[in-house]
Length: 261
Image 1: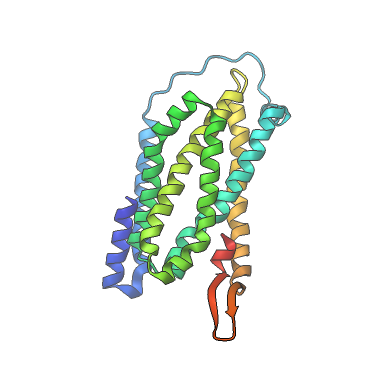
Image 2: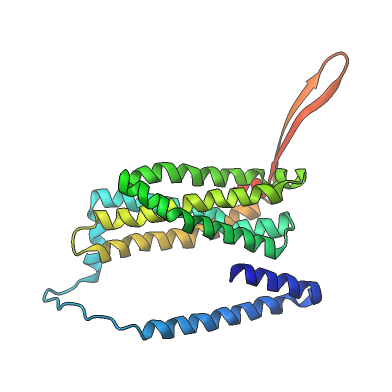
């Protein structure tokens, strides 16, 4: 659906370039229709009744208990910082590709499809790794891969100017997609594994509370940072001089989105 949406927007732009906003509007209406149908289908699913609970339920107590669990508190701190880092950068990938690199919407959606495809394809492999080793072992492998992928985004402008961004970006998206599968699978497993028996729901709720907070705050911070870096640049020049010649051997420029990533 992502790729189909990209093709639709590019086709509309080729015919009606001045009214591309209506193409996005139609996509949102279609998405709304599928969302309504999804809720209708969910309502039709029969659900077994929960067993009766004689003890009174105190929501504040249920949600605060995970924060008193020392080991689980470490997990939540990790999940907060990890999701903050991801959502600080990822929402702006598309902005950078469309505005700075001037790539087509179809190609950008194709990259998003590669990301999701790589993540799905890697699940079986990561699952085998977790069964053989541990969730933390997978984190130790997938986490640095993901972080390296974020760092490599600083080179996308250089790739574009050199003319091979169209070849490097798919590799970068596949790399991040593979890492995403490992971190997503391992993080959910750790939450369920550390939660005391019968309390997985409240522990998952507490973890998702922090994840949602990080997911909400990071793009706002990211937008402010992107605006601040817009008019700033750092140039690193390697200059050679001798009696016969004077030249720049290398000229590496970091600006705006490079700084941000």
